[in-house]
Amino acid sequence: MTTVETVKLKEKKREKYIVTTAKRLFKNKLAILGLIIVVLQIAMAVFAPMITSHDPIKQNLAASELPMFSPEHWLGTDNYGRDVWSRIVFGARISLVVGSIAVALGLVGGIVLGLLAGYYRKLDAIIMRFVDLLFSFPGILLAMLIIAVLGTSLVNVAIAISIWSIPTCARIVRGSVLSIKEKEYIMAMRSMGASDLRIMVRHILPNASAPIIVFATMRMATAILSTASLSYLGLGAQPPTPEWGAMISQGQAFMWSSPHLTIVPGIAIMLTVFAFNVLGDGLRDALDPNMDLQE
Amino acid sequence: MNTVTKWPSEREVLLELEGVKKYFPIRGGVLKRVQGNVKAVESVSLKLYKGESLGVVGESGCGKSTLGRTILGLEELTEGKISFNEEEIQDLKRKEKKKFVKEMQMIFQDPYASLNPRQRVGHALDEVFKMHTNMPAQERKDAVVDLLREVGLKAEHYDRYPHEFSGGQRQRIGIARAIALNPQFIICDEAVSALDVSVQAQVLKLLKNLQEKYNLSYLFISHDLGVVRYFCDRVLVMYLGNTVELADVSKIFSHPLHPYTRALLSAIPRPKMNTKRERIRLVGDMPNPANPPSGCVFHTRCPMAQDICKVEKPAFIEQEKDHFAACHFAGEEL
Image 1 (cartoon, each protein chain N blue to C red):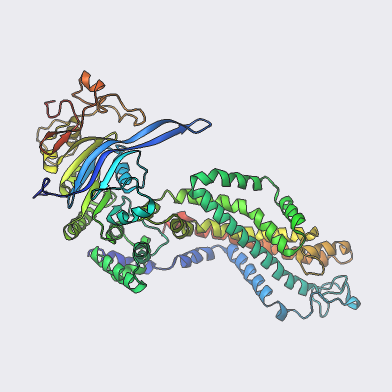
Image 2 (image 1 turned 120 degrees about the horizontal axis):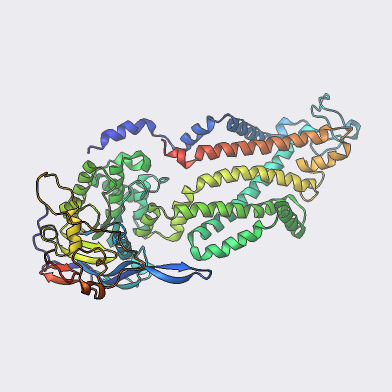
């Protein structure tokens, strides 16, 4: 056929969608910085026992409140003599795990509700009113309410944050579904006799993935921050768990004598939130469907 | 142009429409009550024979695409009967409908929009077999490769994404998807309108070849009279959801009976400079289909309109042998 030549010309451009997205992402310097911090953090969480020399929970009152850059404890120790570096590293584990669980649960709930609301007109009003109801509570207040019901623990923090993530996610997904379901390829699938479930899962969801990925990344930052906030308030991690928010709350009493007890975990939280946010921003630009067309 | 050999009396009826109506309700107010209807398709009755191509022409908004979608069940039928191979299909439940889905397929207008951009072409075709057959994976893959070859593509195109193809190639993929299950009937909804003229010719030729090979029937929806003249055996002219004229393609083009058809035909630009030809100009816009004119829907723009046209709706009747038209003054001089 005459079409062969045109295809050969395009051969060079053949690459996976994920590769083109990654290339665009790497043009954004801030996003690279965010990605590096996130990767380092994940590495820190995974290899925590190997990069720390002290038990994060074991007390050593003989070496309490050592300042930063002391021998053996480069980030100092807290009032019980626990190594701050070890606690920060193990805290990364908690933040990432709780954050991921919260975001994952929120995504599942949000995607299911969003798909149903966007696809079935009759369900739309009911589901979206429920979502509005969730929206009407301030985030932290809702989380506190849920924790008050379920009890204080990190698992409950994750559940609370995930419930609070559902409405935003549902709205984002619903919006995408509403626009995608009018596309001709969905009509084509219906004309082929495809079931609603197949259309939603195989055809609408993959095309709505870009905003969901961006949402998940950004929400990770919020989730980590909220975990820290709730722990700071004493509703999340309980002592002696090395959680960043809890560390700040415990270090508060020693703010004048040992400021590093609040500043170090504060910086850890700030860097993490910043990293996930700029990564999310970068992903949004890289996944922008309008840039897709320029290929 | 096409020569019709044994049409129509000896041919078997494949699809029959009886009084098919499609209204879209207009809802308004706080309670979302129905306040009126957009009458997209108004009482369409026709027969489609095995192996023929029936062209459907008309201005945009005349209901030709809606007609196609309604036949396939993509739009819910408001009223009327649709029979396929002498079985009524309008009230079938989803499961019972599955065997008719295999027989009736559609090719869409925009080849850039009718393929899922995140799905490899091979997988898109594979999915059709997955949904409707119990073939094992390897067999399905072979079938997909055969299909790709059938429509003039290659086996190595299996793993590509739609954006790696040209418009004409994508339309071939759309055609491959439509013929995958060996249907008897395909609705081409402006199937070549979005393509370059040279590519149009190739795709039309492919459609023709497939028709001969598989004895396919087409409902060919188009606004391009030139393409319809080349491709179709019979032509249905629609205006504001109503059927206006139906006849053999040669009859429609040589002596149209309905003034609307004449106006449409006179709007085709012709290459000869000095031929005398009267251009019938239609004044005004198409009326609102939510509030169509009384009597003959065309009377507001018709150059031949008389008093009767405002009152009485002309029936869609056989004016000459195999030549239907809905006009009180069908065939009369302007």
